[in-house]
Image (tube, rainbow over all chains, first blue to last red; front, side, top):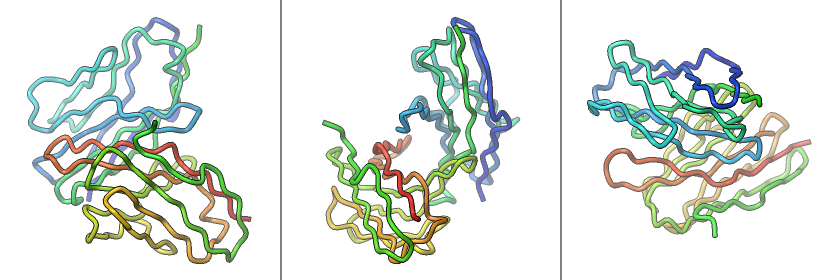
Length: 115
Length: 114
């Protein structure tokens, strides 16, 4: 079975600072994918970034990067230069072969960015 | 126009009523999914479909049924709604084209069962 753990219910950061949102995962699959989604207060789910288990480089998308440490089974999201619009709920998710390529989500981390 | 649409966006209904939530997509994706989101629990998979003839139960399918009417349409039904089905429901799609198989979500339907 696949499991995603996000241990930070809430995080606070000041505008323009960097913040790391933690995600650990558990799976017996050798091939899997890790995703981060953002859910602003309006409710929609926005795809941010993807990391494949065999990708040698950490994924980056603009101000988002994924700190992938395979041996530790962690896939932390790093947001650089936080903006007020980054205030949202963030979900880590995993897709593995044993789950028939469906996504398993963590419970999320609420990020609040202050001026 | 949005690639994945859900109707209705909000719905209030009474216990015991049958209700259908609809999802349409213009992304041309083969795979479609239904999730529910409850506070503090993240998203949980209800049903998924990898093509028109394929329907699979997810983690929490009891009390729900689905219909894949076409590649672009995937409906979720609550045959007899109960209050603990009050939640935010999301439809998602993905393309069968190898990794990453990213799922793209609709705007959600907020359902309240009284």
